[in-house]
Image 1 (cartoon, rainbow, N blue to C red):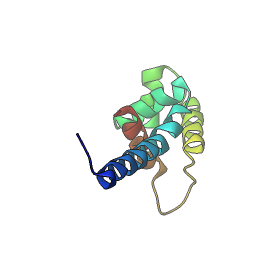
Image 2: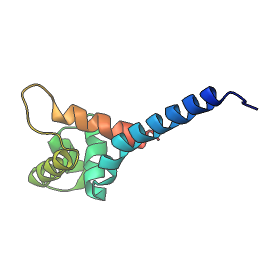
Image 3: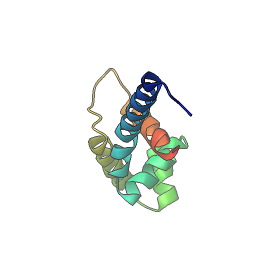
Length: 98
């Protein structure tokens, strides 16, 4: 039994911080369509757009549209400083690891 109010407060703060961080990571991934999650899952396996297209029996153009949707829903703007594909995979892995 915990009798120190400061310890209880610390534990509650830690829980709330962890809960909020988990929601930040998983909620954007949950906004993806089933097909976008499939595409992102195959990208997470290291497959190229052409390999994803073959695996899902869709065109590369369709894969590109799904990837663009993933980037938009995960709010990953195009910049020279980051690789959106890698950031999308990291979001996917964090979201599915729970």
